[in-house]
Image 1 (tube, one colour):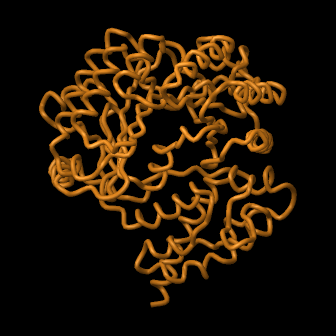
Image 2 (cartoon, rainbow, N blue to C red):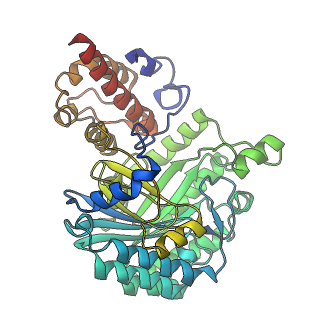
Image 3 (cartoon, helix red, strand yellow):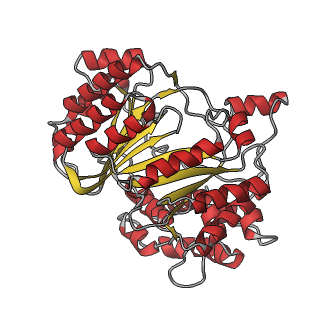
Length: 447
């Protein structure tokens, strides 16, 4: 059984760089049991006949990329423009298949997100067709955030116009770094200069929120390059920026290249922490608002709504090969194999790959995730999320005292995450989730 001391931070050194030996990743839905394959279709049908109450988002997955970037662990299919119409037709079929369900129509959808892969690889007309179909079939909230995620390669003026005219109001562009050498070695296809030109083209339209993703800790991205990346972001008229720390997934091209000696190693954890700290301070000094541990907004136009809601347990209606979603406490994923995905849709089926049983920990996990996402540990709301939650505050107090002593959270009643706490947010999140399960187990033993 867990001992809270397992998640104590080191009291030696700098809390930003030395609090823990490793960062623990967050895996939503990992504790839920899968529904057996033979029961999945019937269980999904029953789930679609239930009302969806509360904050909700929609996710659409486009599983194609022009190339496999070295750092990416999500690559599935090589892009060919002849695939655009076929995949779009299938995606629209799936949207229509789901549209009449009670789960689809019973509550407003607050945000729509096109992810991947590379959504902007699709042809202009196909992107517009999907957006128009969603707006016609589903109950989008009046202020619904509709985000197109993409990369600069493939994303031309025609596609931008098509997305805007169809109703997209937010673009999230993965740049990672503006440095040419870093970009080339990681597999990015356009220059840093072209990236700057692209953002000027996009922001000059003044029709949507524009967000840039930066990655810290990349090979060849030394401190000087990182400072230039931050300066470049600050010089552009962006609405938001993400600062993501690089994670090297086993088996990715980057992992293999480093092991073969064909690529410089990524930055170690203390150096990533220092880079994050520099980005945190730079953006704050420039007046950017911190919306989450990894996201900042420069204007009121940027809400980061999809990311904030999905990380707080909102219902997620998922569409597209390889997509994943959640509905009324159950998580699910769709077939990653394109051939099988197309075949199931042709047979009138939702192309399910996995469906879980109702996760009894979902409400409390969501409450904890929402607290960390807001960068404020609200123990009262966490306790309210579970019938047996009364007493969790007292149980976890020694752990919070350690985090306060080290400097991961503030010492006031709000227990806000500090700069160091924001860097280690996923570790704090997993610690609090694990501690709650341990608390319930101890309580049961006592009874």
